Image (cartoon, rainbow, N blue to C red; front, side, top):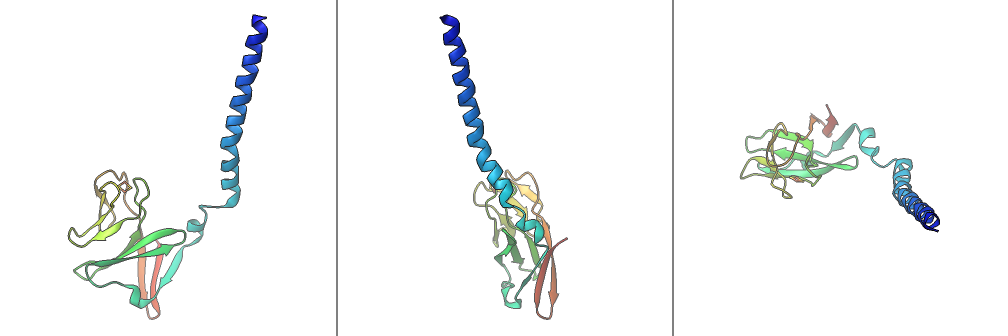
Length: 144
Ligand code: FES
């Protein structure tokens, strides 16, 4: 009698564990089949209109594939393009004119406005610098 109860409990636990695994596996399989996350890899260059380049001390967020990028014109007039997804937990960063740094409002991360190097706070890695090329018909942003 005791063995039957133990045997039954063993099967119930196996069934619950199997269902739990199935519940976790279905969304994962759907995600892998959807191709989400591949968009950014396919985009290697985008064009921005000439007038998108901001005034000195300002920035502009733009879409680079499925991810945000940031275009910064520092007070010295130099223009930089970088990825704008914080390397900590993925918030979109912004430029702080007062600090002349890229700032993440979520947890206080700071990055160098020219190189994207992570300077302080929790971000474990730098932002990626994007190549910025000025041509007659606009600015071309591409991965290095
Ligand atoms: S998400 Fe940017 S510092 Fe945490």
